[in-house]
Length: 79
Image 1 (cartoon, rainbow, N blue to C red):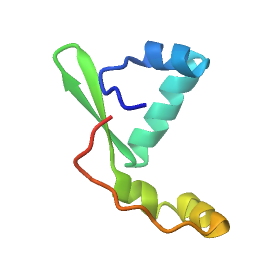
Image 2: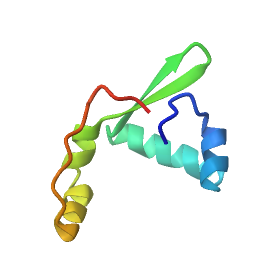
Image 3: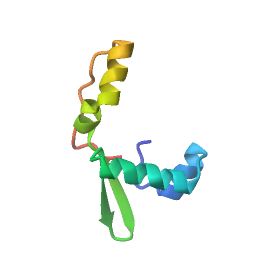
């Protein structure tokens, strides 16, 4: 999902999941340092830390299992 203005409610509808599940997942990602939540006016903007994601043990295991080269990521890209 590349729209960084999408609300959690819109994300829940888009993914056909409950808002509670989306909220818990986003909170968990923020707490683990994989994404950053920034308040802008009345809206939250989320930024993915691709380097942290790619260093995560589960992602490393997945990349090793499917034997794909590690992609080059742009740390400044927001979603």
